[in-house]
Amino acid sequence: MELNNEVSNKTLLNSPIPKNEDASNVVPIEQQPLTVDYIFENLIFHETIISVVSLYSEETIQYNPTNQLLKYYKLNENIQENIIKTLQQMGTSIGKKLSLDFNNNSTMTHLQIIKHICKEVYHKIFGRQIDSLKTNHQGIFYLLDKQLLANSSIDFDKSLENYNPSESQKQIKCLELYPNFVAAVLGGYLDRSVTFTMENRVITYIIKY
Amino acid sequence: MVKVYSFWIFDKHCNCIYGFEYDSIKQKVHKVETDNHDMIAKSKILYGLVFSLTSLTTRYYYSNKITNESDDSLFPQKSNFRKITTGLYTVHTFKTETGLIFALLADLESGDSMDIELQYIYRQIYMNNVGLNPLAPLDYAETETEAKGKGFRQIKNDNFDKELYNFLEPLL
Amino acid sequence: MVSSVPDTSISTTGSSSSAAIKNSPNYSNVVFLKQLGEQVFQQNMKKINAEFLTITYGSLVKVLIDHYKDDVEKCNQKLKEMGKNIGSRLIDDFYSKVTTQIPRCNNLKDLGNTLSLVAFKLYLNCVPKFLFDEEEKIIKLRFDNDINIFSKFVELPDEYKNKRLYYSNIIAGIIEGALSGIALKSDVIYFSDTLLGDPFSEIHIANVKRIKDEVPMGQ
Image 1 (cartoon, helix red, strand yellow):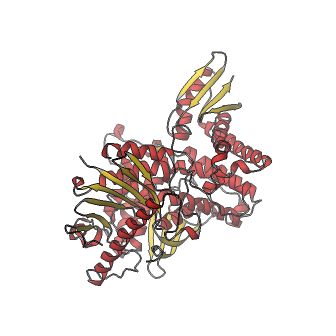
Image 2 (cartoon, each protein chain N blue to C red):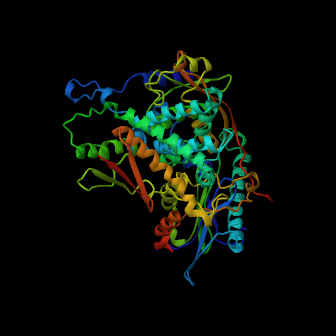
Image 3 (spheres, each protein chain N blue to C red):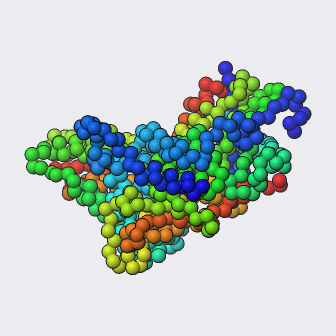
């Protein structure tokens, strides 16, 4: 068995770069972007938001993730504000760090920058592009996301103890945490404030120039 | 054409967390719900059947010394129950490594295995709407007292219902 | 119950059918698992750039440190709790991705190989070195300097180095949560971390025990 282990270590050490004589065919390993599984990334994204809520709502370190979102609407307004503020601060700093390798040369028009946001930045966050882009041609852009909350599997389970059918409209308030966070990321990236509206779970980010 | 009579999901706490039965005469779906005692009784009987046959066959496996292991080893071999055929219908089950049991009652046309269907339900419908949904609980038994078959919570998720019915409707 | 119906037949999976034993691949063959890991990784179409994950995680750790007012022990615990919640969802996803191909585990060595060669490859696109302590029955996963995505490009201030903040402690939590999903109780600890000046990063999985299957009342 010991031998086996050594073999495995050796095979691991042998790097899988093919020794191809034609140098143009070899992709340098540094240029391949590091990738992770989408579902894994998504789980960490959700858990990040939930754990920020739990920091303010719970004394203990242990927490039940589902209850954090279900009980969110019951929290004191001050606490809710603190949570949103923390998420926004996080988002802004994330956006700023993401924008480091984006050289914003002045030749880019506003539309080009917004398209860059819709295609590449959103792709970095959720692995897809934004669903649609509208503009009034006077410097206001509307970015619609129909998938994050509306078309997705995020839905209440009605059998839970903390689910309250008579207050489900209020309970849905916890979903606002998501666009709050993402809007802050986009805002940090562009270095300007990004607002959003949410209607029937369709999120519209509004960027003003 | 395969006909499906009913569908059930059991969790690792021996609770039925989802179940429905199709009444072909009244064209109505009966679901397992807290106030539907008839369906709860049925779910308990079905779980009892699956459970006792699994433990029976597993005990035979170890007592016949087919293996040197004992059943309290770290990774015991489980003789998981796949299907029973009676003269009238077949019970197909699929047990996941995490302890969920998906069971499907279908007529004899269903043949050897409905594994593909059951795995589709697990991988696509269950995982997308319940397993990876941050608003669905990690565990349907919220407290200790709801474990060991005494739980009463079921999956009540509109998207899950819809997708499952869409998938099974042609077979009902 | 069964015998009352004349034409009843029962079929079961697993060990009792000899075909299953014959077809199951040789588990000691690490090469097989390695190929499986590669294959699952290639087949997985839903992959995403790791940049956002790395940065988000960094800012989360910062928020935790601020919130707990430099109480590093609490930060470590919180990160582990988060990991457990993630792990208990992730294990279902893992099996739904590899369920038909993955061979059965027979011992802790198999478990360690599966973790490092398949699970880490699939989710984090890195393969930690797996070492096994025969006497203590400890699974050791060793990360060579830069392959851990979470701690890439990270440098800790000396203050947290001295207090031993395990920056990637979430991974330990994820492993513990995932193992508890398949009825294995374990103690997973972050043993050492290059970020803290140790020669290598290592995660130790110790005291692996089986949780007995629940029996319904009245049985």
